[in-house]
Every structure is written in C-alpha cells, then in structure tokens.
Length: 303
Image (cartoon, rainbow, N blue to C red):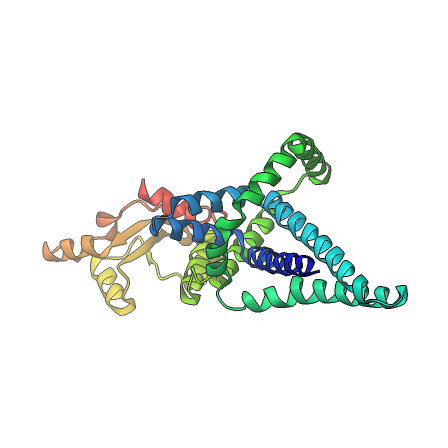
C-alpha cells in the first residue's frame, strides 16, 4: 500500500509539473517565444535558445508530447487511486463514488487549478526555467510522430489548397491591414512596442498608403500667380502668404506653367531684377497623378 501511495504522489507531482509547462506554453505567443529565445542568446544559454526555436517551428509536436504525457499520468494516477480506494471500500458503489470524485479532483485540481496558480505571474520566466526538463519528452514525441510527419504534412497541404480561394487586391489589402493591426496589438501586449511607438508606426504606415489626391491642396485654395506678374509682385505675395515656392499659371489655374522658388526670387532681387516678369526665374513643375501613393512619391523624389 505504501508503495502505491508513494508512486501516486510522484505521478501527481509530475502531472502538476507538466501541466504547468503546458499551460505556460499555451499562454505565450510565437512573438513571446522568439523574444525568450533572443534573451537566452544574450544570457549565453545557447541550448535553451535552440530548443525554443525548435519547438517554435514544431509547436503542434511539442503540445502533442505534453498532452500525451499528461494523459498517461492522469490514467496512471487514476488507476493507483482506484487500487488504494479498493483496499478500504466496503462495496462497489463506494468504490465508484470515490473513483469519480478522485477523477474530478485530479482533472480540475491538479490539471487546471494548481498549474494556473503557479503561472499566474511571469509565465515566460517559469517556462524558461522548466523547459529543459521536458526536452526528453519532445524527443520521444518526435521519434513517435516522425513516420507520420509526411502524411500529416500532405493532409495539411490538401486542406490548405481546398480552403484557399482567389482574392481580389482589395481583399488582400484588407487582410494585410488586419494582420498588421494584430501584430501591433501583440507587440504592445508583449511589451515590445510602447503605446506611443505603436501610434507612430501606424501613422507612418497610414501615410505611406495615402493617395496623393487626398493630401493635395484643393484648386480653389491654391496660392498662385499669373505668368504676367513681376518678381516684385511675387516677393510681396511670398512675404504675405509665407510660402517658399508658388506655382505659376497661364490664363487659368488649370494650366500650370511652372514654379518659382524663394531662393531664385532673392537672387533676382539682389541683382535689381525685381521689375522683370517671373518667367525669368520660372522652374519646371513636377506633375504627380492623384492615384499615386505617398510612399511611391517619396521614393521617386529620392531618385
């Protein structure tokens, strides 16, 4: 009897330990695991770092190893608990009641409640500490599942091909935006990205995707000069409106001839050419289609 009780206690401790690892692992995202791997490299723990990256690439296999070991421990403890109760039970009904109660306590208490209490604070650090001890389980699971890896990979590929449907450009853009938003939320939740940094990144991405037509000055609000104007008139307008460059049109604002810059105007003013027409200092205008994005415009301006 003492042997059964001792073995049951050992199995219970192992059950709580593996359940804690499983629960901590399930609460950490892929991004969190990558950060743990990077921290392990910085702390000069290359073995742990390599193992983290390995289970990150084979997450289902690692969960399979933990789940299988936990189920075996549950069955073993339940059998031992039944044998122990059998020594004291006067009838089969009492044995049945105690067995059901024991199974409930094992499942809820040792499989759920205690592990959840253990990882309530700093689950990533607890996982980092406990992870090396479960490496043999992962190796055993890899050995068991390796003959079926090709089959499951083929089945997964077939399911993926069956569920993939052609997407339009708008749908792809919407999916990419959703993925980016989710990535920002995960980064903020993991503490990698601060709230202010997230807002800055989102504003940069939003600006890069903005169409030029959305940020253009409306035609009725454009400050421009007719080509017949003098350099003196251009100087007065620049001083009044505080612009460093002004477009020049012929006959109508829809017919832009070019742009004058304040540096050219100051040069002409220093040379006493203020009474000349502004076409003397006129530069070519750079025309941009409204459908062009801000990112494309910035790239073309760098050339």
